[in-house]
Image: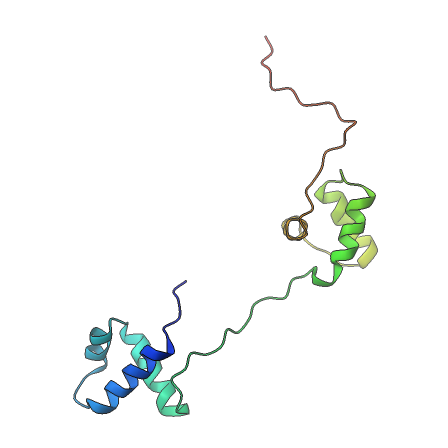
Length: 130
């Protein structure tokens, strides 16, 4: 994703446009090393609202498990070696909220809760058998 163009450059483009009526939008774009579509949008915004400032960030999606972090921490504390499927089932039972395993995995990572193995499980062996 490209970085937003600074307000200073936006204002310079508008001032240049006001002082040079004979420039086309493509020539303005070439002069300031920006795209023609940016010039079109900037001029349209400036002519309709009188502002050349960038629009604020609109945000993003709200996390599904945003209000259930403490519940998830409690479930992991109760059984640290639970699989994602087990945690998913327990979370659904406790909160009536259905989430996918990837969503649950991201929530665990965000909380810095690692999936732990039980110390009573035998170690897996990678030695070759003949």
